[in-house]
Amino acid sequence: MEHSVKEWPAFAVVGLLYRGKNDQGQIPALWGTLNAQAHAIPHRPGAAFGVIDNFDTEQGIFDYVAGYEAAPGAATPEGMVRKEVPAQRYAVFDTTLPDLMAAIHRIYDEWLPAAGFRRTSGPEFEFYGPDFDPSVPGAVMQLFIPVEDAP
Image (cartoon, rainbow, N blue to C red):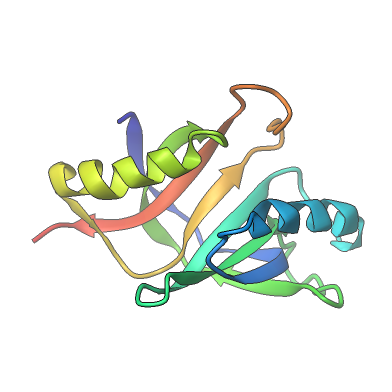
């Protein structure tokens, strides 16, 4: 798989939180709700993030924050959350929304075991650049997986 490995600085995301399995399309619905409320986020840049954390592998649930990078010192709007993402080393993969789940499976089932890395603790995130348009077929987003060298 095409990828790069890079250090990414710490940042914060302000947006909406979902905790569950995403077994009924809750995350796409969360993005729809966020887009309707995005005007409330102060100093909102163009890039969006989907931050995935707090995995419970037994139950298959996780936290997902759909949001925008938070400006330093900016208030968190009522009804939204602020998620801090630490500086880490990430394996970065380009994919499209329709291929996202297949890419995740390939990363965890094939790439990580063969690449000399292992997933480390911390959130992974989806990065949607300022020019990303989900209505455009083939629009590319990036998936960031926190990694460390395998022993």
